[in-house]
Length: 364
Image 1 (tube, rainbow, N blue to C red):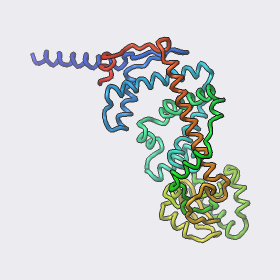
Image 2: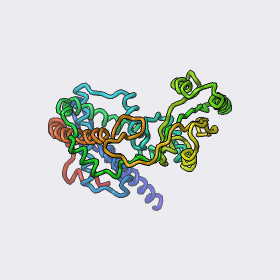
Image 3: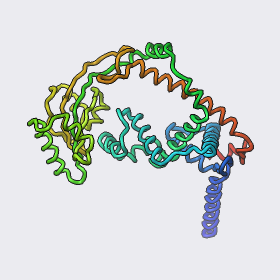
Image 4: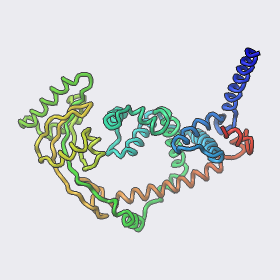
């Protein structure tokens, strides 16, 4: 009797697992403009799981329905873009991904994936891939394909549909000055400096790289090589065997990480002399030395001031770009909603589950 009971339990467990698995692949909607794309419970669940991890709570059935609508809308606009012949290449997606990450980390330029990996490893003690996974719950490829690619394509689609109107949208003088007055305390420039930095990558032979950087430092100290000579040579690292460039740094933690040193070391650099080559530093993936060329004290910026020394861009011009972009993005979002409303019709979307049936499927 006990064997029979165990056998019955195993059969019921198997049936339950099969039923649960089948429900994941239940069709919720079908999108069809250029292609036929099915939205399943599993697709919604995968995204909801990430959203719940970020929110630290379970989403309500209504919120899960909103996620379903977002998925449908994304498929609609991507298919409409495809119909219009708009695509994004792998290299464009890669560049947009790196640009997005560099902006989020408030870096002064777009870093390569290797540079991002070195930066994260130095500060977080984890790989860049692990960092992205922790931040988004997704792999790098998933972020590129599920976030960056759709975003890049729909923006291009919206731009092509509204190019002329968009060009007429710009910040007014009043909007720029009002923005400055409301955010005046944010327009400051911390203690800053301009340095000339020389770096030799360790790659597969750190010792040979060390010998190389020692020779370069000796040449600078003896006057055999001038900064201008090295600046030119360093523009082609593959040929020269080293990189060399001017670097603008502020007395902030983020710029210490960018240089590959501790904040305490950055403070030492700011306290150090001008026009004197430093000792060689181990910055993880490279050996490097520097020479501080100029120092600039803390400054509260007026609207007509340049954002940083030796640049031509003023605070006024910076605000104009920010406000103009904000206005254009608001306009594009309005147009996106209008386009989605025109696309989200029974002709383009077949809803397989609605009402209580939909709520039940989204209540896992």
